[in-house]
Length: 117
Ligand SMILES: [Zn+2]
Image (cartoon, rainbow, N blue to C red):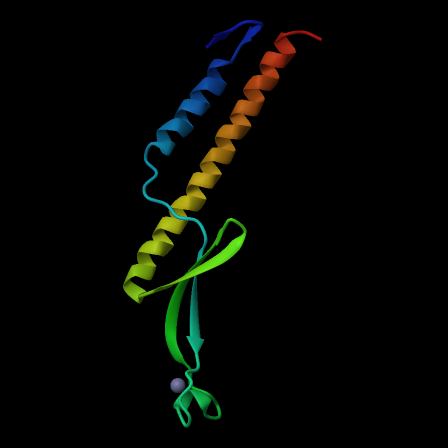
């Protein structure tokens, strides 16, 4: 890439293109986390109120922040697996974007130096 005031090295362009290729393979993704919990119910005399308590569950919940507020969605165990996989994709995407940003910073730093003083 020719730029006024300098060029971006072949190595950096190659590295960026490598990450761009990885980016194109990122599948569906989500943010947030899946929590697995056991809970008591309200029924008097239920095993969950015993000693020791035997709680109900596991229950799965997807928790995430939406405009600063925590939002929770209840999931079946089957669908929780999909959520977990897509959350993992989301983290991979974040890592990838961070790498691309680093390469971009190195590239622009190179341009800045070539631009002189
Ligand atoms: Zn109970």
